[in-house]
Length: 391
Image 1 (cartoon, one colour):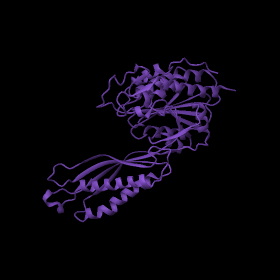
Image 2 (cartoon, one colour):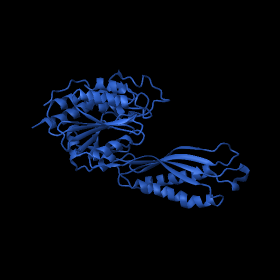
Image 3 (cartoon, one colour):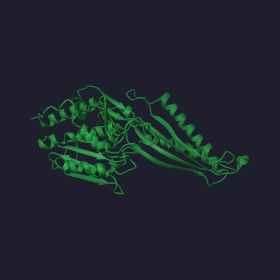
Image 4 (cartoon, one colour):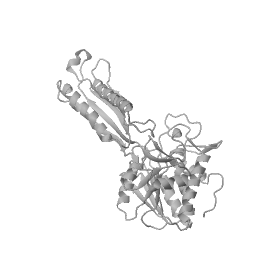
């Protein structure tokens, strides 16, 4: 049995070091990854890096213990969302403790979990484990779960693969078995401009965009009112949202271009691609012929911005039973926000979500995690370690 940790978070110093790296998704994360690689090397743990095309970002994958198939993967992303335009009361990339709260960008989403994992590395490295622990630290999760796809592809080529995965997104240490999937899209509407007194000679891109957005809103109402529903989610139905729109140059010019962004966050038992096909069919079959009756040089371009799979792990799966034991709870839940979990599940790794901090703090100014949440995560890791060390 490993010794009891002190009552304060043993991971707090490591969290301060991780926060100090500005890993906003638009920047490189290599300094943080190199820090983690060098930290693991102190314990004779090798790391494998998988890079993006620019080689300015990387995932890190490491195995602690015997290099055998199976074991538990602890996964988290290293990137954070921007602080631009937010009213911070502290320096966002310097960890500040105030009354049991640790302020800093990424403290809860999700460097707190990464810090706890790293804090336990010495225990795992110095004791024989019954099964290996794997670490996966990814890039560009916040902009579409991009980096982890390369890590998973690389993992598929290896003979040694994890059996279970715990993703440490902020759940207040609740065990989460499922989350919604997401498809986010950009629609470019190309019309024809003319003087606003001659609207019959033009194709108004803004108005056709508005018709598509109106159809999306009606789809959203239909799903809200007619389902399908799953009361374990909040909200309990698939949601559709239009978040950005831009078009037109002057009121007396029929606008030639309009672009808008929209998204689906769909229940695990729904087909997100089918929803997308419905809106594209409406635009192409209903609206396009009318547009082309004026001129053929008009239409739509559909651009995928980001997508990730839903997670839907059965409560009867072994990873759920194990996670409930480690979190000391009989309850499991589902969340509407997305993670890399669905991608690991698609790769054949049984996955749950469980991590310190609250999603209510994520992406906000003055983001914080409580010392109590870090300590709860450390207790989770201690129980995991005890299980792996027990005879």
